[in-house]
Amino acid sequence: MKRIKYLIVLSIMILLTGCGANDGSKILEDALTNMQNVNSGIMEVDVLVAMDGYSIDMRITNAFTERGDAHSSLTASVLGIDVKSESYTILDGDDYYIYTNDNDEGWTYEIIPVNEYVNDEMSVGMVSGFADNYKSVTKVKSDRKGETKLEVVVDKDAIMNALVFAQDLGEEADFELADDFVMNVYIKDGYITCISMNFTDILNIEESSISTYTMNFNISEHNNVAEIAVPKDVYDNAKQI
Image (cartoon, rainbow, N blue to C red):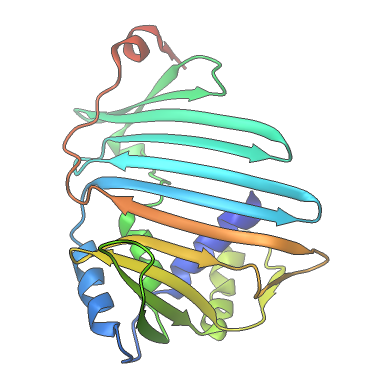
């Protein structure tokens, strides 16, 4: 799990400024501009890792509104162990009410003042930033109906230059990239709908053998999630911690 978090943080840091002018760059630039104005939506993150005889298969779903409410869920299989959690984050006056249920152990909630709340969820803006520091962009044949597909190339040195930031977070940098990184970016109606990332063939981790390392970010309902409510049974039965 640590290495997954590390690569996500690393990817956010390297994709900061656009460059290059290949076919497709104007489409990408326009979509990135539009994504800056996405204040609500649904994001699904799928991570699949297989290395050294163990595997991680994880899905995170996060629905969020403009005012800061959210509904998140996580399901994962880690080393053959099933893990799941669900949460609601609701703004009420000057406080956030956060309802959580881990592994069906029952709902609990805590109250955190707005000025003390730290949102560590991955936002749409952060994810769209994956495509923002490209080396080149090429429009290719799409395998998703009605969506434009772009191949976005990021220089491997740009990725490695972000290691300083990751190390400042206390994360261990124990990998290198064998080549420039290529991601697939899908766009529909001017918005990014999917970013697909495959590290399998270019990622070298010390003393590790990788057979699969992929991440997919699907974004939907752009600016179309108006309200998130806590179900009545959760509200009635949650215990304060």
